[in-house]
Image 1 (cartoon, rainbow, N blue to C red):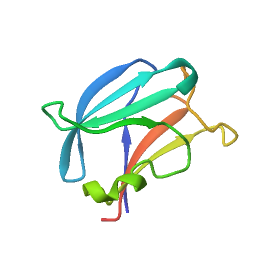
Image 2: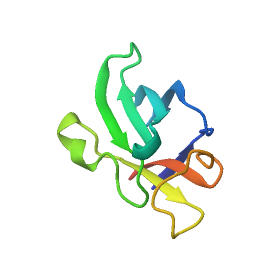
Image 3: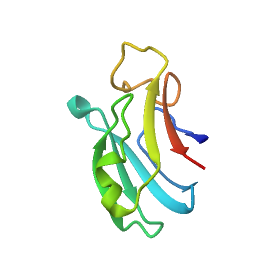
Image 4: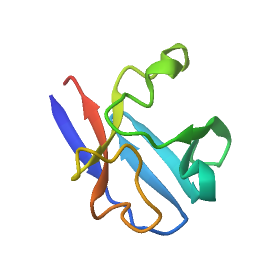
Length: 102
């Protein structure tokens, strides 16, 4: 098993990152009541998945296996009672991990 923490800050952000065999562009936006939302795009910004809410302890990519995603994307909070990253703790007390079975 290979675990890679995706470096984040508590700001809206767009960046390109290598995840497994894929180079992807990720966009994270804080949407007030909806919390942090993740969009996954190709490097040229073509949308692949839009509007994934960041929720702890579930594989965020599980519903998208039909798109070829076989690995996991997990949000983990340092505070086990917290189910969502807050506006100010993303990347500090709430972490996003890419997990492969390799």
